[in-house]
Structures are given as C-alpha cells and as structure tokens.
Amino acid sequence: MCGIYGFAKKEGALSVLERFKLRGMVMDLAFQNEERGKDGTGIALLSPSKWTLFKEAAPSGKLLRTKRFQGMIREITDRTQICLGHTRLATIGDVQNKHCHPFETEHFLGVHNGHFMNRETLLKKYSKTAETPVDSEAIFRVLDGEASVKGMASKLTEMEGDFALGFALKGDPWRLFLIRNNERPLHVAYVPRLTTLFWSSDHEHLEYALARNGLQGSVWAILEDHLYIADVRNFNSKSRMKKVPCAMKPYAGPGWTEDDFHCQRPPRFFSFDELQDFGLLDGAGMNERSKIPCAVCGVEFAAEELFYDDMSRRVMCEACSFDCLERDSGKMGDLFQLSGV
Image (cartoon, rainbow, N blue to C red; front, side, top):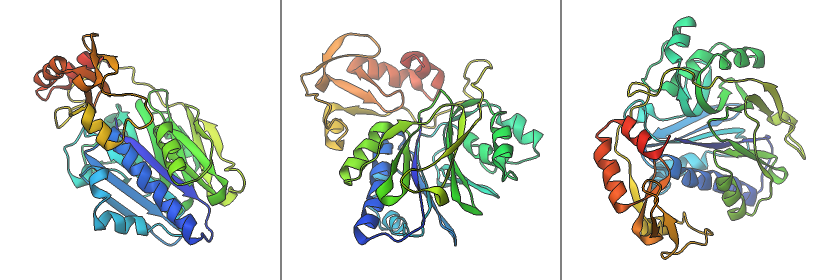
C-alpha cells in the first residue's frame, strides 16, 4: 500500500494567502499519506517552462521538517500546474532514493499505488527496459511514446494487477491523468476559488487538508476503469474533466509469490499513545478504554492494549502482533495469511 496525491491547477495569479493555502494543501496531503507508506517520499512539479523532481527514502513527516523538502514546497508558484506526490511502502525493490516515486521516463512523470503483475511481458512486447526492479516504473516505461489518450488507454487496458495512477507528460504540463481499478482507492476535490483539482488516495486526507486550509470542495471517488483527463486550460467554476472507458485488468494468475511482492522490512506496530501523538485519532471519538476486537484472534481489548500494523492497517493484541513479527521473517506470504488479504 502506498499513498498518492497532488493537484492540477489553472495557470494564473494567486494572492499571497492563496499561494500559502495551495502549499499548505500539499504539505498536509504529504503528511496524511505517510500512514500509507513511510519508506519513501516524492514530489514532481510541472509548469510550462520546467519540471522539478524531488524524492528521498524517508517518511514524509520527517522530511517536512527539512530545508530541502521545504525548498521544494517553495517551488510551488502561480505557474505550477501539476503536482504529483507519493509516499512509498516498499514492496518490490529495497529502500533507496531511486526506488521512490514519482518515476521519470523518457516522456512521463508518474506515481502508482498497487502492483503491476504482467510487467515483464509488456516490457518485452514494447521493447522497453526498466532501470529499477520496482514494478511501478515499468508502467510508465510501457506508456512511453504515447501522447494520445487513445494510445495510453490501449496500453493501460493490457496491464494486470491493482492500480491507482496519477501521471503527466513532461512536455504537456496542462493535462493530468488519473485512473484506478476496483482494487485501489483514488479521490478528488475541485476548489473553484483556486481553480485547482486536488487528489489523494483517501477521502479523509482531502477532507482534512481542505478543512485545515479553509477551502471548500466536494470530495468524491473517481469511477473505476475510466481514464480521467484533467486539462487545466478548461478549468473554471468546474473542473470539466473528461473520462474514457479504460478497464485495467485485475490479476488473474496464480496467487501472490515472494517474487511478486517482497517487502524489504518487517511490519511496524504503533501503540495507542503513538497514534494519538501523530494526530491520527483526532475526531475518531476513541479513548484508551474503548473496546476494540483484535483483527486476528477476535478478542476485545481496551484500545490502549492494542497495536496498529501499518502494512495491513489492522489492530492486533500484543500476543498476535508478536506472532506476526515472528512469522514474517522476510516472507510476505505469512503476513497475507495473517491479515486475511
């Protein structure tokens, strides 16, 4: 599981306050998406005159406090039209900078949440070569050379796996492309005040960021199996996005194997106090005495006695969390069995 987020904005002057809110949205979405992946953070910015890429194998919450990340945020100006953001949960490919998203290919910049299962077949079919073992990079390598919506959709429909994608052509900073299948979430919110479309994996992240920055916009999930085209030149009181049918195939092969999905670290568990300190329980109406069943054994425990697994996104009692760590030993098959994936 990874997090993807960003915006598409019509070029035009912003007031100092509006620019502050735009940058605040990106910082809030980066921080919120950390819960979906802590092994890497990346942002790409596109404008008519240039594109800029930042990515580093560190949690977004940590990077937000650094001068290098803050410098990237200050790169967001009135002329920035597309932002692609990502927080990585390492699966295929170890934890290092070049394995982080967004991925840059000859023609594309893109981010992905999910798995691309028939990547080797399609890379061979289209005579493309990936520079990293990360399956996500192969998506944009396969797309290289396609500038038309029809051409992109044709190749996307050949891909098998689970997908939520955000991408743009490096030479076309006016169009953002979004797509998901039924295996992965992706939500958007259009803010007329900024003539900006914001997007993120989870709707709660968008709602939180909009509220914190005093912005109004309806949050909704894009339809699965449709390629959305957000052309910022058409933005006005509405985003006027277009969409075309584009059914990316769910994986129909044999079960997951270690070669298909190999995590480079054991799961991380967080206590109730840590979740409270992170602000992830704000508004949940939960206290330390709330009774919650363990996702594995089903026995109810007080919330303060449970632990949250950031990989399966489930809560477990202390005994079951220890079992999970022992069973992992670098083999994801046991974790999938435990979490019921």
